[in-house]
Image (cartoon, rainbow, N blue to C red; front, side, top):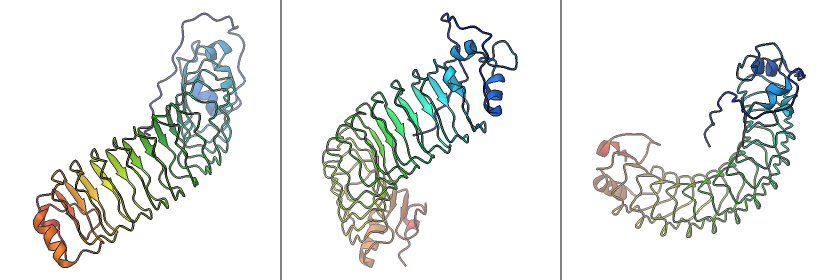
Amino acid sequence: MTNETFPEAELTTESVTINNNNIIEIPDANFKKALVDNTEINTNGDTEISEIEAILTTSLNLRSKNIVDLTGIGYFSRLKSLSVYRNQLTSLDLTNNTAITSLDCDGNNLTSLDLTNNLAITNLDCRNNQFTSLDLTNNTAIASLNCSDNKITSLDLTNNTAITSLDCDGNNLTSLDLTNNLAITNLDCRNNQFTSLDLTNNTAIASLNCSDNKITSLDLTNNTAITSLDCDGNNLTSLDLTNNLAITNLDCRNNQFTSLDLTNNTAIASLNCSDNKITSLDLTNNTAITYLNCENNKFPFSELQKIKTKYSEFSYISTKKLFSPIEKADAFDID
């Protein structure tokens, strides 16, 4: 998932009855400065933030402000969008911020995140923290979730059936149950500890990255919508893509294949099958390929000569040098 752009605070126009003289105590100097310096929040231009100024604010962009303590955020009870990206927070209490739909707390030092009361959240980016667990049982509205680069050991998404994009890469997950998550179109679960991954029910997936796990078999029979597949760095001995006719980008390097049948996959434009044990590669039907890397396999000299002759029309070919963009026939190094 890319970092979302959070606009500066916007003001609502509905009437409120809170006294504008009630000043909020904000212990963190950097947090207070960010609020006071924002004229859309600090509407009277003084050196304090009042309760009425807080309650009228619906969006807060606090990215990279060196904030350690967010005490006072509870007064912003009508916040819909909050970004505290790249601060130094060790805790984040959003109990009173029940209107939030978009939360970005990426790049802090959070060890936990309690979103029990935040039922309206649809977009959550909490990557690059120190979570070992993440409870989203109540957050059934989430459509986009990025919890990558934490220390999460298990992730229960049974109730989160609205998710369309899931990034949980770089954790310590040993399994991932997506049986109920039928709406997922983008899945990035690389750099975990999976030995298996069941995507039988996830027929909407278009982009899948499950690289750098320990997966020994991958059944994609039902996943006919996939256009981009990266299963690099697993323990796969075979890969059946007979039904996956929509694939345009395939990275299956660093596995244990001895063969790779891409006869039906005529849409493939980019193929990296390097660092396997492949002895023969028939790409007769794969005329759309513009990038091919098949280095470090078990091709005999005669097979390399055949590849050189047959596929010299491809834009980028490498049989030896990893991802070396050398044009056409000159790309072949078969010494």
